Image (tube, rainbow, N blue to C red; front, side, top):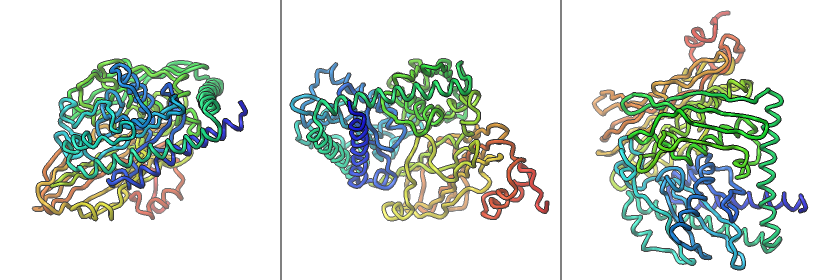
Length: 554
């Protein structure tokens, strides 16, 4: 085929996925999607291989490689035919590949009676039932306790919206208007995507689009192989690199994630054998989560700008033992595995690869999404809070940013205060939270708010309170997470990394997220940079003197 035509179709398809995301965001009801952009869109071939994706959430996009194929296999097994105008809905983590909050929709693209491919999106719904507002529970012992489980069913059948099913779903969540509003936004997104794909087909024809998509996948396969081969030659990289990391359980005990990354000139094999068995807490990460986190970490190291689609998985193989923390079997709870264990998977792969590629791997970022869920009478609020990214081989980490497996924004204070009985007290960078280094880690965030009504349920699901984000090449650890409640009587109640409590009017919640680890010996940091950090209030003179070999009058 003409390579120019292939390129035009490639970027047209990517743009369609981007437009789908814009439609979803602009028509959503909840601040979690409208303001935080917690959604993702992609386009797949008739065989279920992702050919184009928007620049959305790494967790969603990486898991869709697993989720699309699982849904198609489920439909085939159950004898469910996908007709023109049908849309499938599911949130089953063991099928869709993340957790119950992430509702996945899939729509076939029919052309003259044949399926060209599929349009798909995922959106994090703020509440899907379960024992805790926000549906990410710290104490769930099984999946059913985490919320409503939706097997793959038709939410739209031959262009007819199944209002009866929507009513059933709405009756099982805490904020029905948000659920339906966000769901309708997802449907609108798919419909616009279908319209744009059909316009593309009218211009180029079914065969040209189909063949171009196959060529796009083949190109990514070839590109990935060439990049791996280039790294192997440059760094003498052939071999197996291992590392371990740990997750914190609610009783402060630790469970291990172990990885082996085997590299040769043709492929990469990632094996999680040796990881601890699944646990009776919601830190288990389904296989789709493990694939997504592994994909992110490898892409970041191999080539952050490389094209990404299912051609990547023709080169990269990911193995995770059944029944383990990173590939549990149902009905193990998995709500927090999606948001927290995913971050640790990235950390452990970076740690393993740092032994082979020290000048391409950053120090550990904060390693947590810091999930905050609050619910009262007829309302639920959810957000993840930014932190510090790790120091890099040639520059500092970034202050107050969402790192690794999340790519969302913060929820603006004005939006929160307008929609919920919450008043913000503080929102600032967390001084001295960085990991010291020649290139210091980014600073974490302090976010504090007061609740304005009684009987509000607060759930915190975070990490890195016991084991700090690590430094690299002589860099130091960052500050851990720290959360507490100041009661209206001024009594301070410390919260664990995974905790749940009742708030009453006047109580203040303080969230302190970790910084990123440092890169390189802190004593070699440029003095002007130290002075700049001090003048901007990012680090104290005391810390500069302790860790950076800084003499105030030197």
